[in-house]
Length: 138
Image (cartoon, rainbow, N blue to C red):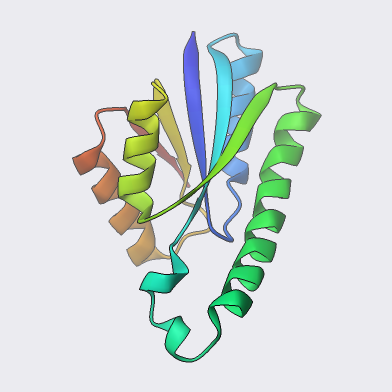
């Protein structure tokens, strides 16, 4: 039985990954589903030069909360038990470290709502940094 890790990247919901995770759970292939909300460290970005850090964090958390609620709703509707947590840091590196630390068997990455460049940057970073298998869904 697999432990499935579904990253929610900032304000982008992981609905396709949640649907696939629910399917794996229904088919008795997955025993555990874990959602990890990955947020960029806003203090490292350029936006703090133009906006206050507090405002950026508030806006980022609200957008991420909406994305997380969409992902969680799919799993709840399918009756899939899950856990979730929030981490901050560079996307690919943070997901790879989290997957290794929590011994995930597979990472289901929803690339359908990411732009072309970000999708490939995250995918290549994960494939390079992670020993955990990564499945990208479109």
